[in-house]
Length: 422
Image (cartoon, rainbow, N blue to C red; front, side, top):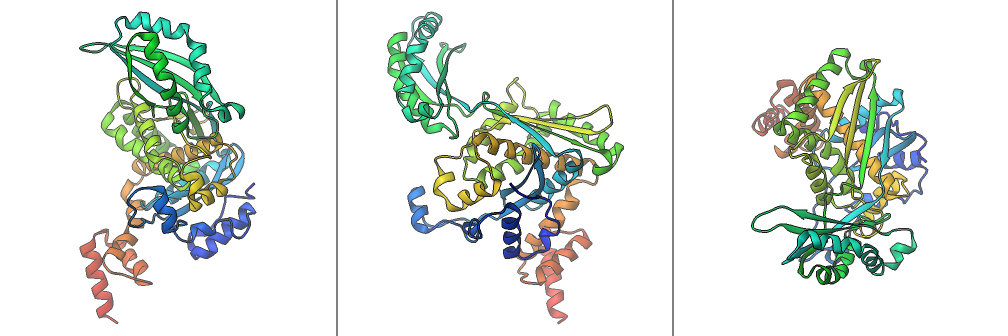
């Protein structure tokens, strides 16, 4: 287990020195994170992962520090191109340390596959017939993946929905499967394909779509953090944070950006560990609209002692086996860094980062405005885009912040002035 995640001054170290610091903090072998030195992926490996490969796109991988999750010091990899995300999450994690960090829980790893049934004369009668054959269908599904059953997973339930629609209702069967430490798409899709002919026979209709749903509402994670007012800017800032967050519950326009802030943290960890970012994002946004209106995934309150209490609940379909998590060396290194042993643990860490990032964003909005910190870090990217290199980057970035004009044209002007003055 990591001795500490409180790595002060890490941002001031050279890249190689940072990697050594992380390795020492976790107690890893010196080669454990070597895959992170480059892309971690050869062209031959890339060519086997997807079709028509012509190259690779690098994304920076940073480490979120200061996190205590369920009493455990943890360092968390984040792959993102957006400035301020890692710093913001790490800062809120630091604020949470005096109150014990972030507490998380995870539901069972239950995924669902849907089988759409068409041309059914009596949808409600067919629903009853399917449920009468429930155990037969579950046994048929389990027969498709004896290895999953052997390790404790497998089909757990069969649900049937009649969805009112024009010109005819939809009849949809849901197969609920415990996928263990896998994300689960391949397992549930294979089972859906296998049970579809039998369901068609039972209903007297025909099956059409047979595929998982990414609305993994039976596989949710929850995170909770408590922060003292003195750590986050005082009682007035706490009140403003709560008021600002309340708008995201009631207004979908605000909720979209609010949840994007959560996903800044979530997606970065999902990507760094080789999991399916699109699946997690689809599940999150559909879950946010589950009552018919798109709302915030998080809630902000104040406890009896005046402390900020922030909570997050969202689906989290991630795995430790299969996919890029196993085939991509850099993803494997990212998982090693987290020291997790189950997919549930990984999902909990991801939720912790998402919540920390969300608190940071709402705090910035409620206190000094989002641009102050974000644009300060973004200034370095603008300086590079203007042609700055080496030591020029920090000098130009600092001048852009001082002028409060983080723009490429201003950066070009500053750079030209600096070079002409030499």
